Length: 481
Image 1 (cartoon, rainbow, N blue to C red):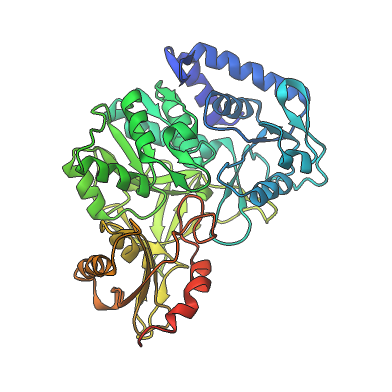
Image 2 (image 1 turned 180 degrees about the horizontal axis):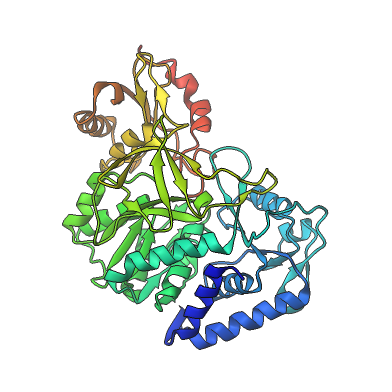
């Protein structure tokens, strides 16, 4: 067993009290240890090697994930927000021989049959060799093509969990509410492993209760009701969820006074949004990470916080800046992508551009998303897009300017009845704070929201820029030059 795993299980042996809860059902740390050991033994007896978790957020997801970690078997979370084609790709690409979840047309099509205790098993046609030590393969949704499998060992996952546990100690977190899908590595590591190390209680609820519906829908009233019922100490939010909570609070909605640590990440967060949260007294801490580094590498904390940055590097990693501004990471990271050569580089390129201020990392945007205008100016569109969606009339924004003399934005209004004049006023407010080369010189009203269903965004809200360009390229030609 890897040293980090030994420390993890040793710490859990020392903890008492409630470990996990889902509705009225609660498991103490002693019961958790027993359940995990029983399930690990069952998996070992079945002789399975690679197991996909196709479950909703809940006790079962957490227990099977921990059992696979204990048994040192490969765990492959199967995100519910993936399309059926993407899910089938994961099952086939990862060589899954055991599926934990309900039988479905997908499982039948892939050759799975029910066996002991409702588990589904099969003999996969082909099994790609995984790097030695791989215990989790997390698939990134990406922006184009099929998801890629990131191979992680226990050491990388638990090193991140230990750093996060230490970072949150001053807040005294005793109860964490899982808001994001556990199939996302961020909630898996920071919302399950880290709270367990802290001897906290992890509250699990089906995603529909949290407010998620389908691949891209979200109902804020459900989240607000859940927060009031739960009264959690900590949450992990995506930027768009934080924006929704802050906007609700500004309109007079009461948020729980129990909140002590709200981590936000997964995309650029406008400093103005963090300032709005601070004025409301919300304890929001921006962080930064990537699946290839087993999630979080930087985090603002109560002891070291600077709005406009993603925080300082956590203790388990080192960061530096390449000559072109790309952020490089050294420390526990992925073993490689499944089916590709094993990773050997000491410093992992992140694909993100940034710089450091007094040890705090300031991100500029994705290296590959940066465009160059006709006048040779480099622009990171995420910067401008984050400013645009801070405006009340604008729900989503995409900025394009590659080789153009004037930048063009495609805007999704927050309400269909909003007129062009209101959108124009919002754009002008943003432009007032931007240099000319980054301003929105022309804009179009989007034909429909950007979401996973129409292929214009990923399931977690990241824009599919190539798809957006293909959709609106012809409309750009009608704009004045």
